[in-house]
Amino acid sequence: MAAHIRRRLRKGATTTAVAAAAVAALAASQAPAATLADGPAGGGDPKAAGEDTASAEDDGAATGNSPYYTDLPPLVTPNKPGASSNLPVTGSAEAGIPASILAAYKQAEQTVRTTDPTCRLPWQLLAAIGKVESGQARGGRVDANGTASPPILGPALNGQGFALIKDTDGGAYDSDAVHDRAVGPMQFIPSTWASWGQDANGDGRKDPNNIYDAALAAGRYLCANDRDLAIAADLDKAVLSYNRSNEYLRTVRSWFSYYQRGTHEIPDGTGTLPTTPSTPSGSTPSPNPGTPSPGATPSPKPSPDKPGGKPTPGPSKPGDGSTSPKPKPPTSKPTPAETFGSLENAGTGPLRATAGQAFDERVAVLARNALGAPLGKVSVTFTVTGNTGTLFAGGKKTVTVRTGADGTATAPELRAGEKAGEFTVTAVAGTGRPRTLTYAATVTARQADTIARTGEKALVAAPGGKFADAVTVKATYKDAAAAGVAVTATMVKDPLGLFDNDKGPYFKDAAGKPVRTLTTLTTDAEGMLRLPEIFADGTEGTYLLRLTTEGGASVVIELTIKAPEETAPEETAPPGTTPEETAPKETETPEA
Image (spheres, rainbow, N blue to C red):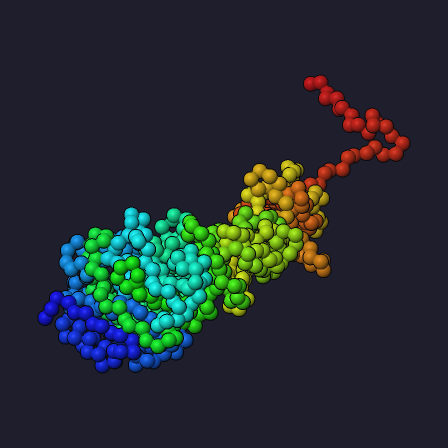
């Protein structure tokens, strides 16, 4: 058996039987074939992967003339399934991936994982597409920055065997001011690049000929429509949205399965160029990414103009560092860079405040576009819901704020109401599919850490009477007057207040009935509290009044009920006599 085999799968020329034979040959030699059975890694959608002329209904795709390289993987498995891809620089150059190209795929995977983790983009899928689109950037012929040198350009899409796509970029990307051409290692046409282009290497340019920029753009494009690429059907739809050809899907899946089993890194510029491009047929091919041929004139494949089920994005101006491309005429459908994608918490901390006070934290959100980048000028409506009396500054329960250039919108300051409890702040943005974030918030009661009686005079009342002196206390919090603090007054039997007392001093309720606990007391603006009148029943003794505040401060005050002390009456002289006359006379003692 030869070390590897190449199959020439031509659209309109190669039958399903030939494709099946190629897959069978690969399977017989233990090479990973383009498996189309259901499964998370190798499955397929029967609708998408049926006859070669079938359309991918779920993606709205149709069969077109989309050239691409049809070379299949070597028949020798690079490593056992699940093995690391970080293998030494050994083995067939065709089986390996040039160092810069491999690094770009892995970087794109990591970037998308942070901005769209539910997509679960595998770098091996990017490698498979890069293989069939440009032979891994013509075997890794890129400069130190990862830019293809010379640029990779497809033939003019002039309708002669290819799609008819008139110029959209003024030749800025493809050097053709009449028709568009597919550009770069991942073969985007200029109008699609204008919407999906990325600056992944941080050089300030979105360059379709740079493998880092192109790989990230392809990754985000494949993740469109909330796809989960760990699901076989979604992966098939993503590939078919790139090129609406079932033979293309089989070829990409063959390389995807091959790279999943393991591959190795080779030096840039040493990769083997593919030799077998697909053959266009028909006069109205789909406008998907073009496929380059070997050398300076690669065969084109139309760019991913319409991801499955996704409205066709309009162009945006990518900064390529040279001449600015001419955008398409504006349409009613926004580009992915203009489309609202998600709403996230922009770092809002816990929302807690004391009644009547301002919240230290302000609610902030971050809007992103469909590509995961910050999106400005998005209207975000913030609403307070709850019965604590909390409002935004200005006394409003609902406010609307637009995001800035950094994609963030910050609500006005919140001021807590006087009622303790929980409430929510809701942020809503978007119209068709509104995104909502809800923040929990808490208002705590005003607190005091100290409460003390302001006088020292003993508090005494006679049985059945009332205490003549009022009880006055002052509450403070961190040595400052604690205004509006709730205070509870309770007649107790012990200093800790564990046992209430049902005898002795008492208050009166509104109906004049005795009560020994009051819970409606509040300090004034100076932190002062004067208790209502206290009455005494007929039981003498010493009793305790315990005052407690929100925040745990307390004070115990003694109250005494006792009868007044009785005093002896003074003796008075009878009328008409003088004190001397009534005074006792001394008696003489006879001498012995």
